[in-house]
Length: 116
Image (tube, rainbow, N blue to C red; front, side, top):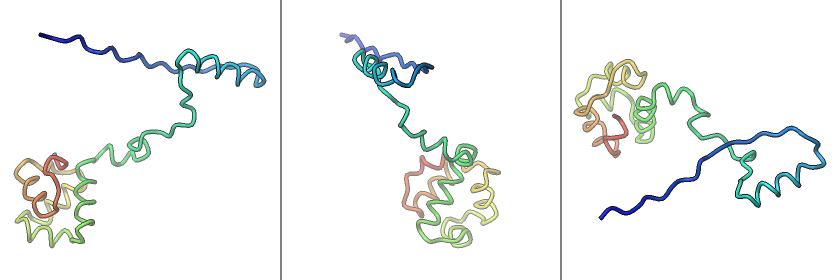
């Protein structure tokens, strides 16, 4: 039998303009109604790295390679993938593909799915 799902609260963001002397009263009233002050919450980490959003898998590949202390040439020798292709993958000019992702993951001690 299907169970009813929980309804998630609708998220809204409010901005107010008014006298500074009433700010604390307004924040307290909104807090009492269940609102949360998010003005001090930092931006999501992906928003801080726009280059990562453009080439996420290439950045993961380069990071994993650096973590393992390998050059592109060494990684190419261990995986059988041409060094030129590894460079193109890291720079977002070539898709990695499932077969190459599995080869890279084995050598780089990672889950192949991060490269897809």
